Structure formats: structure tokens, C-alpha cells
Image 1 (cartoon, rainbow, N blue to C red):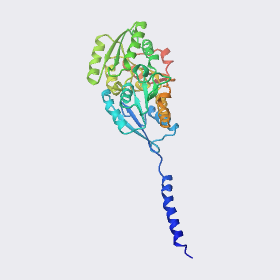
Image 2 (tube, rainbow, N blue to C red):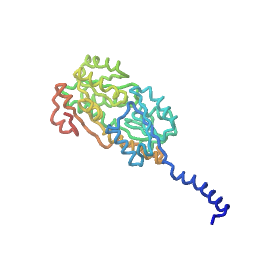
Image 3 (cartoon, rainbow, N blue to C red):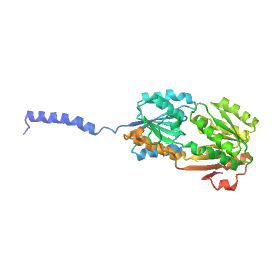
Length: 329
């Protein structure tokens, strides 16, 4: 017995009404977009990037599932950041992670609404990125490198590892506003330790090439390399020229020792990147950047490169080796 035509019509109408609802229930999850703004492209094999991805995952975000990352690299030129930051804003990313003070300044100038995670910024209050560490305000929060607390120790460690260390050169870059206070920290420590400090501002390969003859002419016995993405981008040239000039290098992070720096001391970058990943995830989950206190690193590490020491003809004292978290042979 056939159903009446009116009944079939009603069934058809119900099916048509239900179909869109079923389709909506099968829609893929929203893909959130994080914009990364830094000096160089990072590899998935980098320990710090792995920490960043782990922090995001703990907050519920995984690449190619519900997360996409837009990479923008300044290629070692701080003047490129404003254009790249504006580009990320135009892409309508949900969060921007800015690695370094120049990157964060550019991101903040590009938007007052997109949440920004600062990473490895020595003094975010002094640079004007946040109102205070406890109550950042605005659209910026993240992870400070707390450089003021350990910069002076670079010279103390250098004094212990390099004989007759009475004059030190420091490589900085004028385009990073966060580095001027670090130079002042070094000057204060140098006066206490009886060391003369000469500062050399560089903006690229030509200035780097010219700096090293000037250092040796002034009688430098070592060179402090401040943490800056532009400087990191040119690390191979810097470390090669330092070795050729017989100048021991003193740097801020483990990655520099792995690249060939003699002594490196500072916060664990891998852990700082993990913290940044957690921040980004919290912001994607709806947290307000102005109410998330800026965090400071809690894990510090001293790394000594004995291969570089051998190339320089230096013998690192056992007392200093005993303090190292890692020794590169």
C-alpha cells in the first residue's frame, strides 16, 4: 500500500530541512592562525621550535588539525619588520608571536587589536611594549629574557675563562632599542671588574667585517656578542672573524655555544619558546593579553665549547668547567 502523496511531500520537506543541519554537524573544525615574526626561518628540528609547538599542543592546538602558522622572516634586517607585521595583520591572524624587541615593536605599531606574544625581549617595560610585567595592558604579553639580571655575569665568566682579560669589545646593533640598556649593564660590570669596554654597532656584513680589525687595534682580549636576531642571522661571519682574530667569544644563549661561541650563559631558549607556545594557546582560547602577566625565565644554563677553546689555545679552568650545565667537545 502506497503512502499518500501528502505524506511523501512532508517526508521530503523534513529531509530537506535536516540535510543542512547534518552537513553543519560534519563541518571541519576551525583553523586558527598564528603569525610568527622573526629574523630567520625556524626548522621543525630546532629544540626551541619544538618547545613552542609543545606549548601550543598543551593548550589544544596542533598544526594541520586546528592550527596553521604563517612564517615571516626579516632575513636579518630589522627594517623589514614593519612591512612583515602589517602583512600578518592583513592576513587576519589570530595571534602574532614576535621574536625580539624590534619585531614586537613593529607588531604593536601594526595593530592594537590582534594579541601579540613577545619573545626574548630583555626589557619590555623599558622599550614601551607593556605598562608593567604584572599588568601588561594593551594587546601585548609574553616572555621576557630578563637580560638585566644576567648580562653582567657574562663579563664575570669571561674574566674566569680568559687570562688577563682587561679589555673587551661588545657587538651590538643600533636598530634594536633593547640592547642599549644591556651595554650599560656591561659598562657597570666592567668598571667593577677593572675591564675597559668598547662598543661596536653593526647593521650587516660590511660593519661586521670592519669591526674586528678595530677591536684588535684597540687591544681587545675577548668579545661579548649581545643577543639580537640581526646579529644571530650573521653568526657564522661573526664567529669566523672572532676565531681568525684570536678573540674568545662570550655569548648569551646555548645556541651560540653550539654555533661555536666559547662561553654562553643565559636563559634556556627551549623553555622560553615553550612558554611562548603556552601564551599563544591561552590567547587563542580567549585570554586577554592585558591581563596575562609577562613571564620571566626560570632556567639558566652555562655552556662551554672546548673545541673553540682548543682552536684559540685556551685552557678553561676546572672550576669553571665544573659550573657548566653542558660542555661541547
